[in-house]
Length: 393
View 1 (cartoon, rainbow, N blue to C red):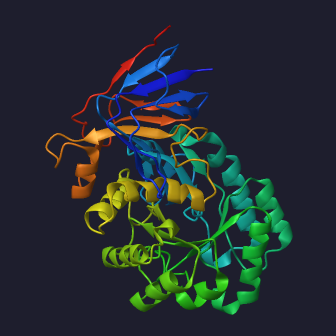
View 2 (view 1 turned 90 degrees about the vertical axis):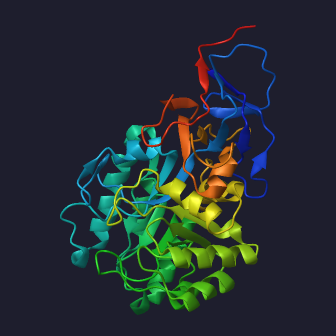
View 3 (view 1 turned 120 degrees about the vertical axis):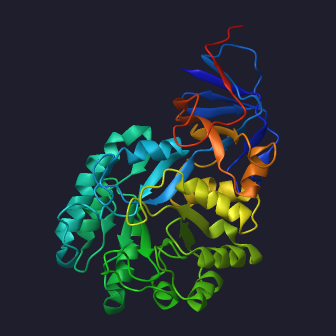
């Protein structure tokens, strides 16, 4: 069993919104999981990292991506996007539908087609863990005429989500509610596109009226993806519903500010989750999840710890993941990072509160260092962690 010790931690972000920071100075990793916080340093360690005062944060969880085939995205004709997001600190991703598959005719989708596409994607992209990132793929784009047998197939394929995007919700409310129920009965979460039409131009406008009766598990990009619902609808969704609410970096900044402030005023930041809604028309954004965190902390008035917890523990919990919180027994998905030379303040918290991107030196997934020494997507941290081989009693 491989054992790793990270010591010399200057700041520790838990990912738990209820207690987002803790005075932890060391952590132990064993068999891919957090073994202990502030462990006894004596004993045998296969790997020791002196964090040199750097911060440790949970790996970021992007709750809204659009994969197609491995690390290729046809919407931006780019290869390697998943690995680039990993170097931006993202360790887990959840597909919001593989709708950019070449040749997919949005106006002629059938129940068997969308189910088969989800099965194939789950068995390929979802199985391969591109660049080492935990990517939950195989999210079916719901269409009329699906039966419980289709949802049985999705469950057998290991699907974690289904998505209302092109589905005509106003024409089929009873069927749509059945889809939400059938999904839950099989342990599958439902997500719905909200706001104005998507880049395809074929999605339905979705605001409070639909969400009030549909009651999905997660309302996607409530502040725009890319077009938000009306301010009045946004306020009512926050005030009169209780499901998880997602904000994406592809959205409207003003609506994001409105939503975050309103949730904070009502003490309901626990509902808030984050994603990028990329790759797509917004592009490929390796640092998109950090951009979300920086906006929440430097513009919306949240503490750095709260913003990081929303991007990790909140998003993980909403999607029923183990990942997102750094506590004994949880997966050892984390990043070591610090302020960049020239950024505001002397700590990561100071930099994030100012809106400054951190410098990432290491990223771990299941206790394995998949980025080591320097991220290729961020400037270097002015704090330089040192990796050692091992120690013995």
